[in-house]
View 1 (tube, rainbow, N blue to C red):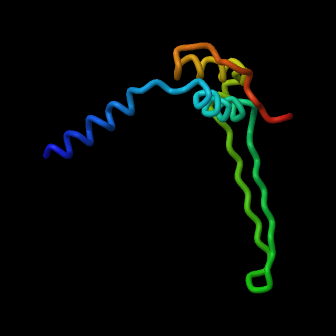
View 2 (cartoon, rainbow, N blue to C red):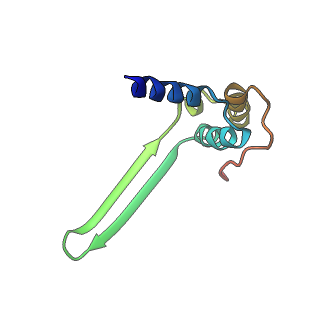
Length: 95
């Protein structure tokens, strides 16, 4: 019982620690890149046993559907996670 209480207290303390600005930037960059527009991933392959194989995915974020500015998404995300303004600009994908 004491072990369980100790484990929970450690987990709760870890959950309450503030996020570093660099980790917040990385996490928010992913969200900002998704806000740039749909992401399409297509694949094609072949082998001698099963023949031709194709795959594909299409994903679009709510931020992209709402037409939000990716930089504004990044800045508000970092501010929400750290309580501070971003320390560097986002690294977005080239369009």
